[in-house]
Length: 116
Image (cartoon, rainbow, N blue to C red):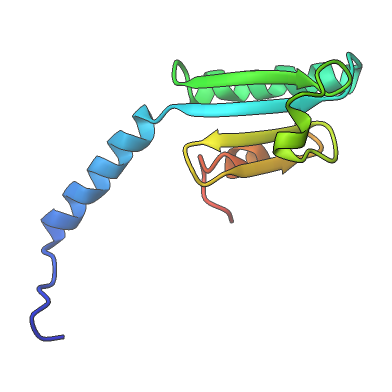
């Protein structure tokens, strides 16, 4: 392509390093929907908090919503099953539905590791 200059490798490296910096400072806004105070719900909250503390320390906000107690937020996110973890920010919006014991599945859902 005439007129288009190919980037030098050092330019690409700088872009990559900048993207990594931004990724490590981005704030995550998450909402975890649970259904009641049962063992499965407690485990979901515990696992998601543990993962967030490990991978997003100091840069996440986690809102836990019991769909049996607070029905005001459910229609907004169209939650059909619980537990459901929704990543509102950074975009794109992502959802992880069901079992919250699979760490890799949650990390992929939060875009913290690439899909394999």
